[in-house]
Structures are given as structure tokens and as C-alpha cells.
Length: 200
Image 1 (cartoon, rainbow, N blue to C red):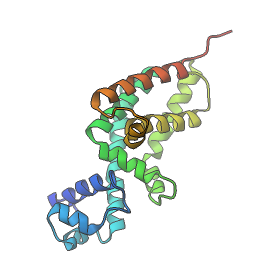
Image 2: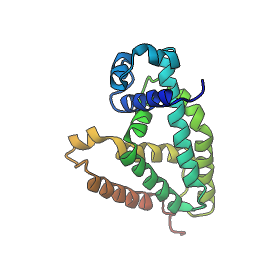
Image 3: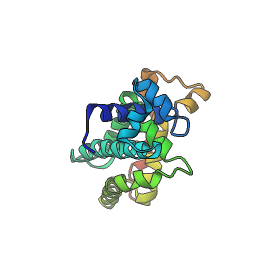
């Protein structure tokens, strides 16, 4: 179905809901009320709640791929590229928290949408893994398993950038200034962890 202003609004509001309170806790009735339309209007564009969720995941994945591909095309190497990605993820967490919130929602254990998101981002992840391997081979990053490193980077960066509930429980301030501080601490940690070992 071609994109229309109404369809785009439905997707935007659904992304906000799914990325904050989650798929299960979001009803079409609640979305319709928030949009100021009848539920049948949503069902005209999306035949079911699942179809709407799938479309939201598809759009979010396309946005994420575009962001990361743009960052990766800058031609940086080694830790400089890793730092650039970390900064971009934190910018996303501040400017579009619902987008990374949706990623968290989709990648939770038992999520049926994980494979859908994975199919979209797999080529980008493959290129990221190849980049890490090249940088290790070139001596610019510490040698390790590139797939495990990529998974660890993803989990750590997205977790620190988005897990506000955990941060509050640990007594960490979720303000913008505190978030910038955490980003800097994370970058320092990654520099130390990824720096090549001195040659013996």
C-alpha cells in the first residue's frame, strides 16, 4: 500500500507505543484513541495488530540500517570507527528513544519479530563483523572472535544507552548530562578493551 500521511502517522504513533510500553501492552483501541481515529481506520491500512507491528519493525530496521551504513561509510578505522558508532547510538537514544526501545522489545527472549529484524540488519552486521576482522588482522584492534565481539558491543552499547529502568534502580541519573558522561565512560572502557596488546 502506498505511503499516505495517515499511514505514516499510524506507524509513528505505533512505534512510540511499541518502543515504550511494548507490543503486548499496546492495543489497537489505545492507538486509535491516541491518533484520534476509529480502530477501523488503522485496520484499513494494517489488517491486524501483528501486521502493524511487522510494518513498524520493517520501517525501524530500514532507519537503523541507514544510520549505521552512513556512519560506516565515513572510512574510519579501528577504535575511531567503534567510537563513532557508540556516539551515533547514544544520539539515537536521546533523539529517538522509541526506535532503540523497539529494538529492545523485538530482541527480548521469545520475541517472534527477532528474525524479522534480523533479516533486515544481517547484511549490515556481516559488514561490521568483516570490518572488525580486518581491523584485527591489521593490528588496529585486539584479536578476538569478531562475532562475539560484535554481539558484546551491541549488547553493551544498546544496554547502556537505553536501559533507563536499570540505571534508575542502580541510582544512576538518567539526565542528558549524565547520559553524555556514561557515553564517555563507555568509550574509555572500549578503548582499553579493544586496544591491541603490546607485541612481546
